[in-house]
Length: 203
Image (tube, rainbow, N blue to C red):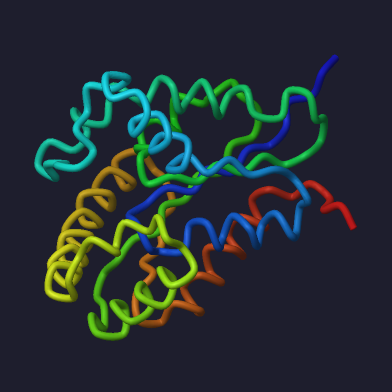
């Protein structure tokens, strides 16, 4: 019998450290990672009619309905992760995954889902962090924003985080606020996942 690999799903708003958390978990488990945002962005940028959703104009008041068209594809990707790699932990991270979609993964083996969100921010410090990151990533979305626009975007991320908290609470999904105590909160998310997914790491 083929054993289904445990799956870790990391959701949340942009620039909360989802990729960094995924890489840290990779170092621990030596599994594999799928960056959902990279996949979705590649499809939408090259196949304009692939999704009905306008990702450049997401309405936070109608967020679920706008992202529903791609949830079935993300769920299928996560379900099929690691079928050829027994015992390896599979890690998926994306800002496009919704809390309710994690529940739809029942029957896909062990699934541990968490969301990384914002509660409050030191805006100037966060803008500087984003700018520093963008220096090594010419495709970073922040290049097209002024500091003033970035500040407004971060405020929108905080508002969107409130929506995700409500959805996580409704669907009993664990969430963490990654605010100005970034290292402490990020470590809490890491520790929670490691305690939930208890397969032996590969050394």
